[in-house]
Length: 242
Image (cartoon, rainbow, N blue to C red; front, side, top):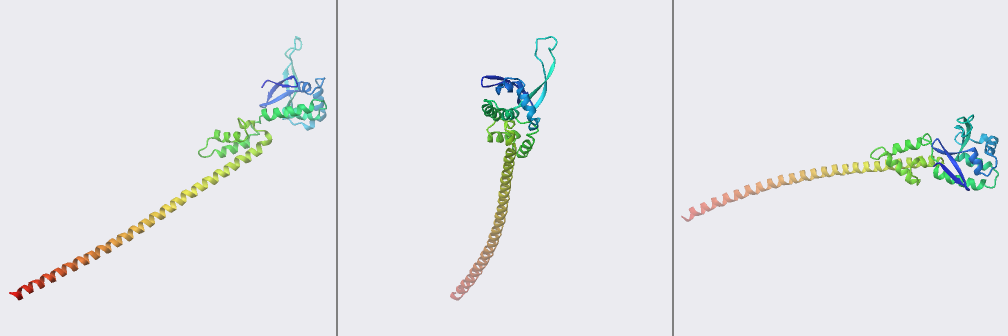
C-alpha cells in the first residue's frame, strides 16, 4: 500500500519494519492541523508515552528545485499506526475522534507483526507440525482460526492467545496419539489372548482326539476278541454234531 485516504486527504505511507508508518506532516494534515509541525509539538510534549515501535526519525532526501538544497537529507519523524492513534488521543481537533476510529480499522486490517514478535507462535507451530503434519498446514490452521491470510497478519495483542491456541492443539494431538497407541496396545493384548485361547482349545481337542483314538482301539480289540470266541464256539458245535 503506497497511500491512504482519510477525510479527502491522501496520505503517503512509509514501509518500516514491515508496517505502515505516516510522516508527522501528513498526520498533522489528517488531524486537521494548519501547521505542519503541530504533530511534532504534540509528540514532544508527550514523548515519554511513545516507544520506538510507535515513533522514529528517519533520513529522507529533500525534494526541492533549488540547486543548493537539492539532494540534501533531512530527518523526518514518522509514526506507526499505533503511534498515529496515540497522537490522535492527545489531539484536540474536531476530526481526531473520527481519525482514531479510522486508524484502528486500518490497524486491524493491515498491520503486520515483526518476525521477532512472531517467534513464540512459530515455535509453537513447529511443535504442532511434528509427525506427519507439514509446517505450512500448521500455519494454515492458525491463520484460518483468526480469519487472516497469514500468521503475520494476526494482531500483536492476539499473539499470546494464538500461541495458547496452538499448544491446546498440541495437547489434543498428543492425547489422540496416546489414545491410538493404547488402542493398538489393547488390540495386541486381545490378539495375544485370542491366540493363547486358540492354542489351549487346540490342545484340548488334540487330547480329546487322542482319547477317542484310544477308545476306538479298545473297541477294535474287544470286537476282535469276541469274534475269536464266536469262531471257537462255532468249531466246537460242529464237532458235537459230527
